[in-house]
Length: 390
Image 1 (cartoon, rainbow, N blue to C red):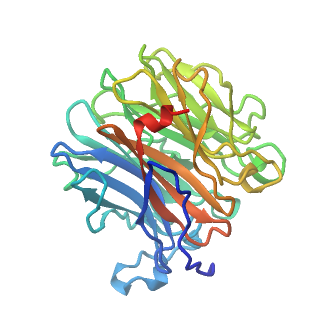
Image 2 (image 1 turned 135 degrees about the horizontal axis):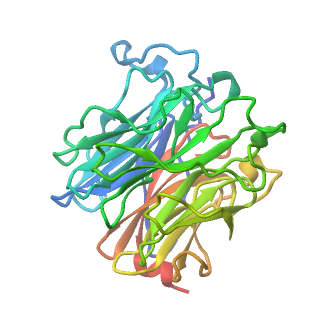
């Protein structure tokens, strides 16, 4: 068992920005994060996140079945479920948490929720159902699932599997469910190829990942997959995963792809995401971490949040100690000067997401100490004007 870290994280004090821990870690629940937020029709906000628990500290009647594939809950392969809470005052306070998804047949966990409102008015929830881990010794069957709600998140339908039926590893990043202007629904996915398919190498280069999207043109009734995008430099020795996507004002799409080359790669689509251009370097320096991109409200400008620290001699090719943001006025082709939301050198600030309310942005992200023994979910309330200030 990983020792427990009791000290709550310290957050950068930035004038004009209000920060609060909205889900605090505990010894029994040491990890929280990978969240998605949606505005409901009655004005409330619904927040879902991955809640990692120590099974031996749960009531016996609530524990999942034992599994040799499961690891410590401070890792991605620990037991996790998707929990949720609501706010009636634009995130100032939140309700008590409730469990939303906890599939007992998942031999590892359920995690990484992504919410979007479909054109028919229903809410789609995509999440990762994992009966295997992301390492060689516990590699196994993982899938992206979706559920639907017709009553604003009060109840959810049975799950539907939207990734290939090959019992290999398919998952995806948090908060990457999208509804395009024409109603097409897209969910970011990536696959880890079976051990032995990657080129020989050490560390992260030994794991081969490819990114793609699952999409539906009938409000989630049927699903298709786009071609997988491999690392153009390393091929089956590369790691392309956890892409973030945005629809430009001209309806073309652009995605920013996580990898270990020191900068995100971009790929573009002019056919509603059915096909994508060959990936090329974006010029945005990045650690091996996902970038989050979103349109600013009532604007053609795009906001990016990401981890810009790159050092191949550090874990994850750059400790995620800086959480930066920047604005593009040309559809993500070039970016303005970055600003930092977090710069604490003794902690990781990562996996951001953004929801807008009035003239403010609610930025959610998770914070770890360097030993990664606890993980808290942070909410930063940021005036949209702050992103533009010199």
